[in-house]
Image (cartoon, rainbow, N blue to C red; front, side, top):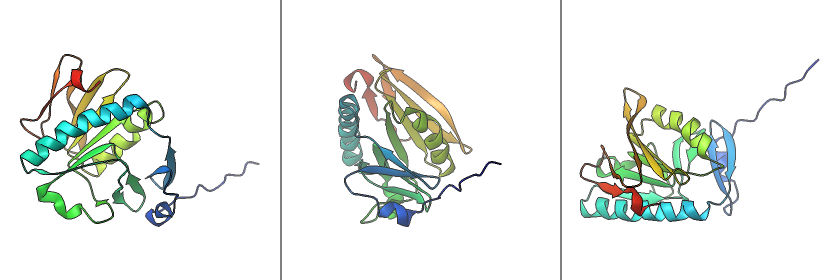
Length: 182
């Protein structure tokens, strides 16, 4: 006779009690501890963040944030995307403590410990919560996949590699040379 152990489903209140010196996310009620990012991850993040933030500021489009910063999608899903953008039209979701709802754009920089989850579980979660655009930056492949939400499903808008220039369907006229970020 086998006995199954009931899996504990955590809530946002449980998540808020996790230690400040560790990076956690809450995915479908499961607390997930993420290790500190690698050097390539940090460099890529900075090289995407700066031009994106400059573009958004210059055009007064909204605000750009970076990890660690909580995005509360619901009581059982709290993520810390590497980079995110919230448009001026949706600024009401920005609170003193966190983001309460789906940002317009989320950028995840893939690392060995998170790539599978970013490509599957988070991709599905972001689609369900209606994040309009989702980028997956792969430091090993030196590529960025840009996904756009169409009828509740992500479609590939482009896969950009070295020598190419990324364009964002959401942030029209924003471009980013892939060679400058990897």
